[in-house]
Amino acid sequence: MIQSRTLARLLAVAGAAIAALALLVPLASAAEPKEGYKQFKGCPSKAEVPVVYFCERVNITGGHFQMGSKDVPIEKPMSLIGGITDGGNFVGGTFAPVQQVVPGGVVGLTGLTWLLEFFGVNALSLYATTELAGVPGNAFEEPIALPVKVHLTTPSGVLGKNCYVGSTSNPIKLNLIVGTTSPPPPNKPITGVIPTPRFDELEIIHLENGEFVDNSFAAPGASGCVLTLFGFIPISLNSVVNSQSGLPAPAGTNETRQKFNIELTEVEHVF
Image (tube, rainbow, N blue to C red; front, side):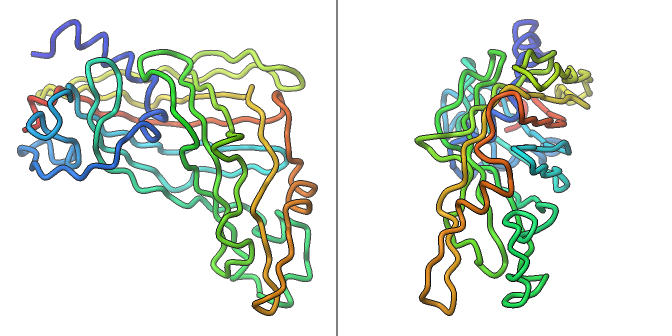
């Protein structure tokens, strides 16, 4: 049976879904989960990582990430599988970053309609991938402090390979909660959703239909966005990206919502 102490921890972990994406240490588990626990493949066993206490599977199923005048819907689910220590740290597992489509593409991002003549519409599709930009806060404490940066890429490479909003030295500092925010104006308070717990016969707790929110963070300007014309003429696009996208954007003008489902169990059940 799942211990009462564990139950309290499992419910607290509901506040750690996004932090999990960042805290995860890349480590491919060789252990094979038992039947009924295959969804936790990638979580390290105690033989591999003695401090692991839980196995977790996180699905970010929807929501959006708005910075300045640009709003990116989360249309492609992101999945994380990892191990958690008794103290709330994530140790080992698998997570593949997912590219989310940015509406309006590169032309919408920059306002440079003449790019269509050089590259065409398909080559100017734009994707945003959220990456870790620092050390997150404790997984058992709310708000979940999460420093991130957003990588902007295109099929044609028209923005270069290092076009980012945020960096390790100047990250986007998210503080994610499932309660009600207290943002600076002009933003108004928004409220997340506490997940609904459900248990099954395999000692797995399901935390379903939760939602994290934050609309108090600031967004820095873009950097590293470089168009290379004719293969040898570099042109910085940072200023046009920032001007067209309303960046940098002060606290109280941005918002993120992250819908999530979580599956959690003690590692001893999985292997």
